[in-house]
Length: 305
Image (cartoon, rainbow, N blue to C red; front, side, top):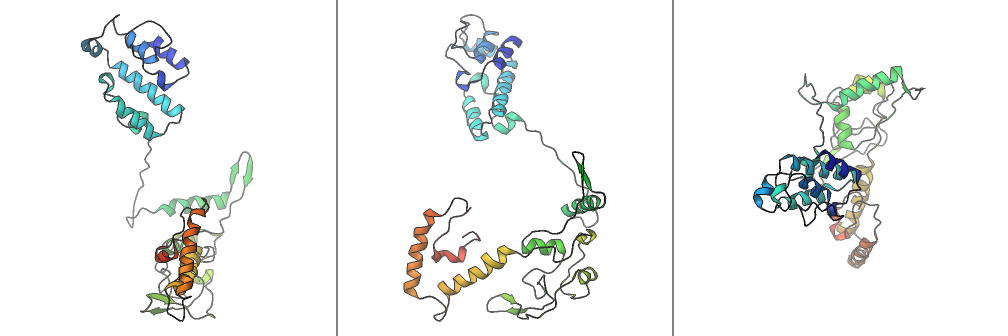
């Protein structure tokens, strides 16, 4: 068995040579694959009955499993193809004990980190980041013998994530503006909040820390205030996704296509745009994750469209 295993690993593996027709023929010809050699170590010459095959020990299945596992990892075979192969091998009596999926075959190790949840009972991912960031800002970091200072000056995130992390009202609230001390007006007709005051005072870092400017704006105290290099809320970029593609641009398209008579572009122009947008779809670059639909479906457009 050890000699057969060594001979397999020394050969260049070809899955087509895994089996041959003459399973128990110890002829030594080139047509005999590595599994044939393993079987020959346990089968008598000329043995062909099922009882002889059943006498092959379970070590044979384990050896085949190791061979397939090494082949899957070393050749980087797709797991879907390996699973299909394993399910096909289930019909072979000697190999019915093999795992039925690639994940069970390769036994990928999994490491689980148990988080100690205390206080609020919530799993707070940001706490560990803040503790590490404070240490790096204070002490710096050394990489390959070179010392670097660390300074965190900004974050990028969409509006809901920003409101969640900074503990303030969401963007559709009456005090939801992240830049100015302005109070919006709710519109029942459009179900939106409008901020009409162009001369409102900007929010400052000091007011954000003391929470003195607007009681309705803050919903709690964020731990990001522990990072000394941040200037809140300016350290968070504006949400391009919801402000432009899903905000201004989509509103303009709605007005031009579905708006009132004095707002839309007219029936003839709409039909022309519908045709042009349908013709443009096949030519959209593959770099975009979503091909644009026709303007008739503008209500369902995503940001890339």
